[in-house]
Length: 375
Image (cartoon, rainbow, N blue to C red; front, side, top):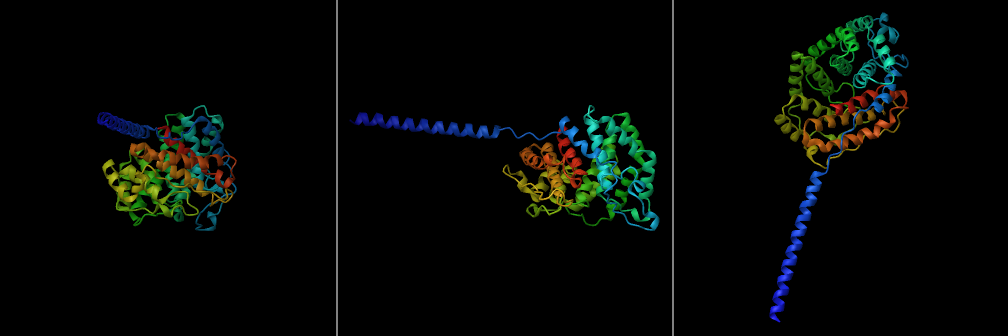
């Protein structure tokens, strides 16, 4: 009797032990599978996207009206039609949208030499960015009352356009870059003159956001080797943002945002800080980004015929380009790809066929966002 009970206890013990080991192995296997789960791939710009998105700037680069000039009149002689005041960048509703519409075509031609409407795009670029037209643009910028014209959003996109031309090994790019260069030089000098005077950064979700303007200007300065501009941007960015903590991302977005004040700050700081500095800074500024379960809802657009409300489609793209850029630079943030994809997928299907209120500019945001992942 006792012998039977003894063997029964031994069997139970080893059986339980085996079950425990089985559960431990299963648990470890589950953990390994979880850790090995591939991160969702970032969305990329394809030839299909390119042919579709090219339609947006092609449809507006030489469309003069409606138009928002945004000018300050010093005298009655300053009044003129858009094509007279801005013969290079008069289309697409306003000056800055025209500039990044031209950037869009250059980016697409550069990346996709077999773009379906290559000839039409090339012809419009050559017609608009001519030496004669740029000379008139320069005269406008040199007017007494236009020193702050398009500061700093339009300035940033002009430098992004110049950067794209500079990095394209193509005869068309050399001609356009040479034609644009005098205006590029003016914008560079405007940055150099303005940034030391700016005591406080502008932390808004629209055009005047300082961090956005610094990011694009940094890219240009870095590519062309302009150390004076690059050093000034780094100095000012550190002074503006290095000691920022706990950015209130839960306050975003405001109703008309197309930029995220918190995310744009991350975008410039990831550029100028070393890995060690950035790790310390982001842990104070937005530590929740490190969490694998971090998420943020897309900006919802209630009316895409309203020029202000449709800004939120732009916010979705600009958030995505910040998250893509951060995740591509540092592997510990690759979990952010899925959030970026979610933002792109919400707004991308609405661009073509959209009203002119969004169509005249949002294509550039989509192209820039998706192009980040080609590199």
